Image 1 (spheres, rainbow, N blue to C red):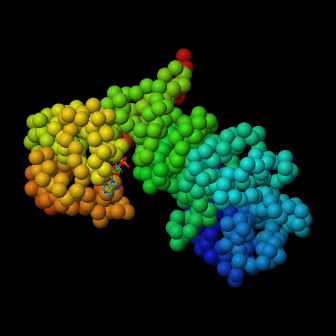
Image 2 (image 1 turned 90 degrees about the horizontal axis):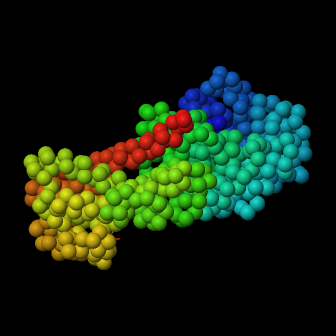
Image 3 (image 1 turned 60 degrees about the horizontal axis):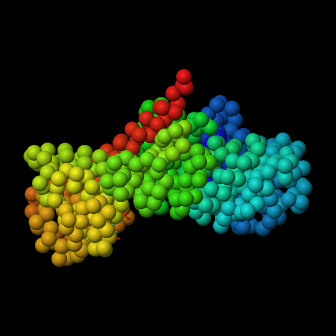
Length: 508
Ligand code: NAP
């Protein structure tokens, strides 16, 4: 179930939000700690004012007045908070009321009122710093008979997330709410049902950029992009790993493609700070395949049982899928290689070049993506100048690709313009300079375009970087990183799709 946390300051604004999201949600949580003081008197009547939900039945509502020590907005005293909870519960319309674990033993009046109103207790615990060692006990329904246990905890990184998933996966199937908050826990919000949580919480989009808890997204994105209601234990789980990752456009791309092809699969961002922990998690969930981005394109290579020549050649891997006997091992690909070349070949054709062989190019940057670019260009028979801020990294790249003799390396500074003059048929920009939010920066401020160069900036946010705009103004043919992004994502998607179709085909 998708549960929308209602965090507006007035009941009428909350009703407007319910109408806005009714098609996507199954449940509501009235966060009465966000209400203006004058709104509280009417809160007992709120559930009866609601329109029916997706199924036509009344939407169940949780009443929550979250204390500040649990991340809430309640500024009044504790007695006043309990009176408000009591007032709401006695109204009889709330299916659930959220009571914190620390209230236990001092909440007899509330329990009595809830029993009389037929309201079920959600017994909640929050940790905004860690995944506590006693998570299993917090989620054990035996420790709160007749109540639904809830734990909202905060993984600091991948090994905490592994601990969270391992713990919830080992629990017996009983109603519970388990949430890993923050960016490191985001995947658990999308996979909540699969991880045995009876619901996932969402916040309305853009209420002054406030969300009810760290990691909330809006219900429409959860329902339409992530197809929350169709994710089951059988759905294939794919994802993207990187750090940071929440800005990635890959979930929008791959989930849209899965939906268009009617595949039972979901694609989730995983913020990964520890690749070893992630691969353990991948066995546990299990995960069928991932896209790999900064900074893990080389670190994942030690997990590969098989490597496509694009991985061996570029010395970097951006796609990992299960392969081999009973899908036991991982196979790596580098879809940046074909993804980079496809738009370049179109631009070269537009420039009237019969072929790339023999042309001279400057590659700016020597990071993970540059490996795929240099490998692809060398395979096309081009001569290269490789510029990087850190010269040693450029040399290492050339050496790793077995191309020390074929690639001239130099430092990316004001003097590089002279070197570039001899390698200016094509200029490929692969550093992260110019990428949003640093969109005003130009990695080659010293270079004046003649207009004869093909200029390719692989940065794709924004699609037209400052560098590309300058090249375009000078009359150059330009290629946006957006084209590479789409071509490499398409190559990746075809691998995911092939795997998903093979695994979902009926066995003979
Ligand atoms: P990376 O491995 O972290 O490498 C970053 C590169 O940028 C290094 O060469 C680094 O130089 C350079 N750099 C960073 N800050 C700099 C600065 N202030 N001045 C000069 N150079 C600087 O990253 P990556 O994986 O190669 O990705 C780089 C960019 O390509 C990102 O914007 C990414 O989004 C984009 N990309 C696009 C696609 C696509 O499909 N269009 C695919 C992959 C990557 P040092 O070595 O001196 O640190």
